[in-house]
Length: 129
Image (cartoon, rainbow, N blue to C red):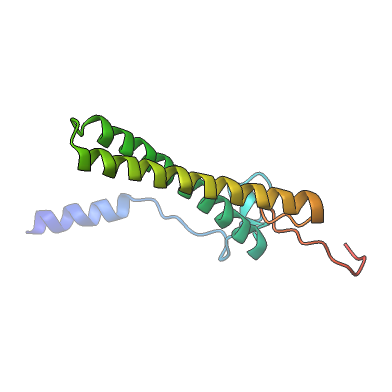
């Protein structure tokens, strides 16, 4: 037991002491990994979520389209399975069309009125930038 106590004491004393240089962490240092977070605002978060939602929904509908094709191939001529696979493919194509129409409407709003919901920059009427 005394050997174990002596060993742990020697290990604790052999570890170099490290003292903190500062009590605060500055994330605003130029060239740091957190440079992109300094300009983070609520509108940029919302526009990022809109972009993410569009991409995720498009991927989900595309996966449904592929899965419907696989179901059709593996149905082996069963009329109910073929009909279910055809319905899934139809629904996936309708979903993809809805996503792309929503994207086209947002792009049209940007070009006609200057309202860019992908960047969430709504023009002001006061004349101040």
